[in-house]
Length: 148
Figure 1: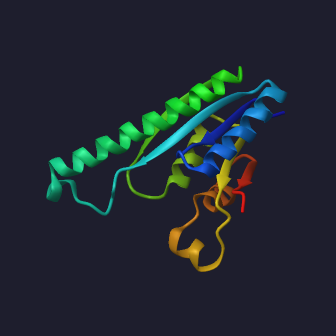
Figure 2: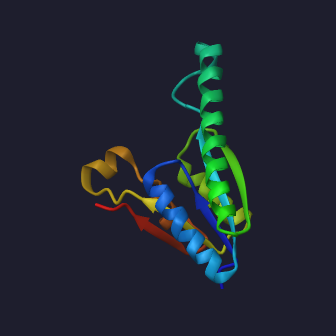
């Protein structure tokens, strides 16, 4: 069935809920988890214009991403589930694109991710990586909604 489960993590409560569900599935199915965190390289900000400031912000994002991955990886290992982690640096676009690409390249059997479940104008304004993943993923997707 599902032997390779891809789990995007961003440190949010909803992503942690998705990770917990993925761990339960992986334990039951004796599956492996790959954690991914996407660092957005701030496409709206020109590196030439801001120079060292841009690099400093980008390095903070990388450091934060590595920390999120490290904490999630430790939590999965503590549950006895095989895990690996990957930091993906985005070059513009949305995180969902990189997650879908990773699902195909790894290749995953399932993607498990948390979602805020936004609707209406909030979804349009803030976007939805989860919606993008559902629409474009080459494999099944399990969405875990935030508690209300």
